[in-house]
Image 1 (tube, helix red, strand yellow):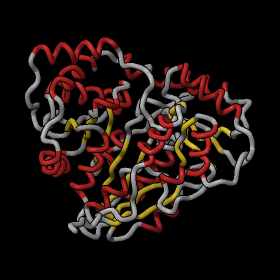
Image 2 (cartoon, one colour):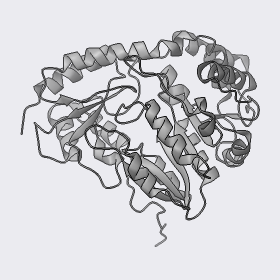
Image 3 (cartoon, rainbow, N blue to C red):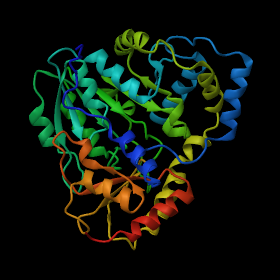
Image 4 (spheres, rainbow, N blue to C red):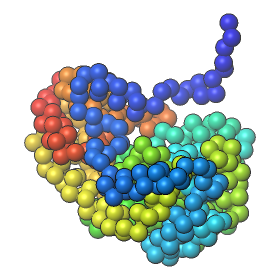
Length: 384
């Protein structure tokens, strides 16, 4: 019998396709997986059709369509007062997940340690392990989900190659504050530690909170891969298009790996995005759009028995179910999907030790009809 020795023996199937399949099987409202339940702007859809018909269907340049990279350079400089050279320091990627994997591949060698702040998006740790690195986990504080900077400082040593950060944060919805930036600057100052900054929800912050990008701070930007997503910004997760920015010396290493993973990214999509990026309303009004959805959804579940945790950004909301059940969150998420026809994500899957906070993640980037049905289901849930 021929067999393959798995490189990820302790990591199973991602929770997202599992819960989506379960939702479909039981005809449940799918508030689990983080994809928008509404269409993209018709103008953008027309643009891609235009460029397909025009014949822009062959390979794009390795690092991406130059006019798109030029517009991204201008956008970042306007927002964060940081200039990235469009030809040397910006690369278009096949989604943010590929950008994260490639950044880790560019940096991590056998035995290198990478600090991962948990709960963490589920692609970080597998990428570290596949590159023979060692994930070093630091958990956010229970209930408040504040960063435990003292714990991170204790885990820094001569083998620390990088720290992965994420703001606005999936799954907690927390947004970094200035004190977090200051702590990070103190930690990396006079060190050889790199940063991988996952900022895919950069345009989705609430209640007047700003997004504090690593790009904005010279002491951080000089050592950072900063990763963004067109899919999250323009409601096009299925287009799998993102981008990464970094200093030239880091980008050279990134491109070495990038060229053998995907070579280049979908050409007509890049042309369409280059034109559409002139429409600033598409991202400057995104926070207000999702803040309205957050507020409406929270209002609609006020009478439920769930405790609603604060949501400062992203399009995810955490619900504490301790008053309802003592069950593990994976079991409870399955129960709600089957019995109440509402699918969610158990947050224990974002921890290496499967920490049980008795909290579920709900995605509110859905149509009003889906959110109304989801809220109705949540309000019916009673204690077991």
